[in-house]
Image (cartoon, rainbow, N blue to C red; front, side, top):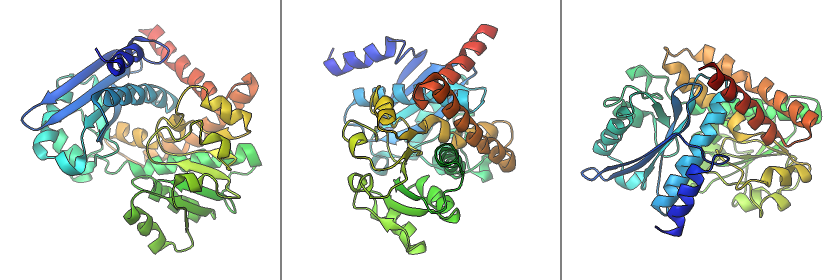
Length: 361
């Protein structure tokens, strides 16, 4: 056993960071599929979470990501008021190189083999069209196209929810929920980020963006030439006068190198698992930076895909996603009352709901 695999197993069986109920390693040699499906906690109901398709540096890194993401989904679904537990899947590989219909169908068969304990949807590297393919083998698939009975792109309400979290942050910190006149830096303007930029501009914010993909940047600047562009994330977090930093790409955006130089007063973004390690939330608090927990504010998408299971209604979903504003304020209030960082307050609220569900069984 390698040190890396031993570390993954240690995380899996250590309750404070793992405690996962079920982890499945999936392989289909014919299609080249290698995937990990992780169920963290199903006290509230079947695990619900997206499928990430990413070229991990190792299989151990893929397992670790699935564990972290599925744990985050337990907390996200609990705070969103959904009757779902936490689940997540990752497919190992570059989607631009190995994604095929055969691979997606094979993946669908693995999800179906869990008999409804895990409900899948889109994530980084997977799209609505992919879920349409997966659904041909698995009825526990959401995020499908409207033509196939689904809700379509969940990025729309994910961005809307993050915007509500920003409004709540502004209310808490500055006494007014508007972003008008504020400078917001968005790192990652892909599936979710570009919708978030639209909300911010409509509200009167000044926006600075960065993305590793030039075409994603151009999509914004061609339509909105007033949007400024930072060379990279390192430059973005140092922008003078930045009020809010919105990490909207991959996780780990807040680490020991980032927090000391961050100029923003608020961090509120769409990326999952933004805190690189335990303790970062305290570092943010010590610097006077308000952190809106990622799994609270980015829950709009999971609210949308959960609704699809019962017959999708966009207006109903948007009303639920709008409540992210109130939930975020509740978390800030509890954090202040108990003298803890907002991430700790959010965890306590989610854990209380899961414990209550477990006690009713």
